[in-house]
Length: 287
Image (cartoon, rainbow, N blue to C red; front, side):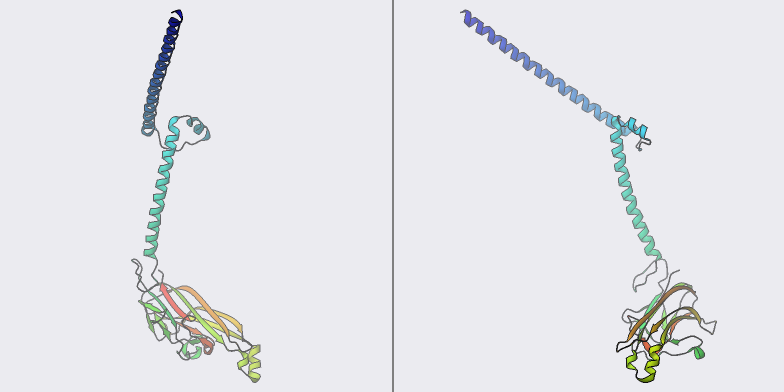
């Protein structure tokens, strides 16, 4: 009987200890949840307080930055500030790019037929050589200019075009006063000395060919054409059976008046290669 009573007492003590431990764990869990909820509410309210009262500015100065790093609001405000700056910078870049593109599109003149610009008049021309144009005409003594004038250009076929400009007798007619960009290129094919026999061939082999291109302006109020630009080079006559190929290109700006005419003259006109892809002439209004 004594042993049975001892076992019952021991069981009761163990059960009481288990119940006590369970109660302690339940109380600890409830306390932990209360503390966690309190921390969440505190953090939420402090974050809102940061956004409502803090200045969204980057901290200036190393000492000030070090002091504010211990503030819970510091990282929140800095991250938000970084996101705002990044978004605004990206939007500003897109808007500025669009504005600049629209501005350039409106100001630059159109050089391609059918492309319209809203601000400047569309005045441009690009004329090309004609293979069967025949011999150039004119000289300094009879026409008042150096070289021989190229009297035939193509203005409507191939890569050539006329946009509010006229082509008359190998001359481009200027319709409006302004600053024009003018350019020209001519292509020479010098025959080889092997194609010429005898003493004439030996003399030509020792000489140099002086290739010159002139761009002239003719005014209605002045009888003598005015030289705007010239380009030149010296080339040796080729030997053997192959021809020598040489090109001259020049470009520049000039202020022109209505009814002014532009034309091209060259030296050694008999050696001119009037392929439209090699010899061409043009102008367009720039301001």
